[in-house]
Length: 395
Image (cartoon, rainbow, N blue to C red; front, top):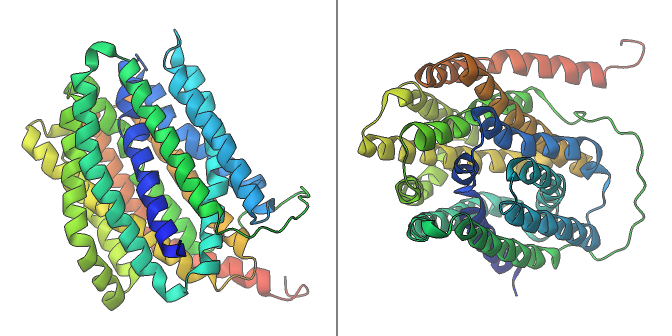
C-alpha cells in the first residue's frame, strides 16, 4: 500500500474516531451533571497533560515503530476506560483521569507522526497533503456528525449506553488508523535513556504568538457547550447540524484557501482566519435564533479549519531550519498545547464572574489583544535568538 494511501486512510479512520468519540463528548459531560468549571476543565486538562508529555517525555523517545505502537496501545486502553467510565455512579473524575492518561500517550504519536511523514513524503507535497486530509476530515465530520447526532437522539431512552456504543466505535477506528501509520515508522531498536531536558529551546517569537492565538481559539468550546446545552437546551441533532454546516462550507472553500496560501503566503491566510473568528465571537451570547447559530458555527468552523491547515503547513515549512527536528516538533506542539490548556481555564474563570454574553465579548477582546501582540512577540524572539547565538564573552 502506498504511503499516501495509508495517510489518507488514517485521516479517514481518525476522523471517524473524532466524530463518534469527541463531537458529543462535551454534551455527554454536561448531561452527566458536570458544573460549568468541570466543563471548562474537561477542555483544559487533556491539553495540559499533552504539554507535560511534550516537555519531559516525547522529545526523549526515538522515532521507531515500537515506540509509536506502544503509545498507541496506551492510548487505546485509556479510550476504552473513558468510554466505560460513563457507566459509573460518579463518572466525571474517572473520565477526566483517563482522558489525561490518553493525552500523555496521544501526543507521543501526534509528535512522532510528522517526523515519520517527513521520511516518506516530499516537502513540497505537504500543503496538498494537509489540505486533502482536512477535506477528508470535513466529509467525515459532516456526514458523521449528523448521523451520530440523530442516532444518539433516537436512542436517548438508552442514555448513557448509546454514548458508550458510539465511543467504542471510535476506539476501534483510532486503533486501525494508528496501525497504518506505524508500518511507515523505522523498525530499528534504540535504547531509551531518560535525562533532564530543557524545553522551549526551539521556540521563537512566532511560535509563542501562535500559542497565544491558540489560547484565544480554545476559550470558546466550553462556552459553546454551556450556551448550547445548558442555556438553549439544544438536542444532539441540532448540534450535529453545526458540524454539518461547518464541514460543507470548509470542504467547498479549502481548495481555494490552499491556492490563496500559495499566492499570498501561509501567514497572511492564518491571520485572516484569526480575524474572522474574532468577529464572530463578539455577538455570540446574544444569538438565540437557531438559523443564526448555524451560520455562526459554520463560519467559525471554516475559520478554524483554515487555522489548522495553515498551522500544520507552517510547522512543516519551519522544520527544515532546525537541526534538532524532534525537539522542534515537540516544542511546537508543546506551546500549542499550552495555549489549548490555558484558554479553557480562562473561560472557566470568566464564566464564574460574568454573564455568558459578557464572556463571549471578553474572549473576543482577548483574541484581539493576542493578535496585536505579534510585533512584541517577534521582537522578543529575535532577542532570545541573538542571546543564544552570541559568543559566551558577549553574553
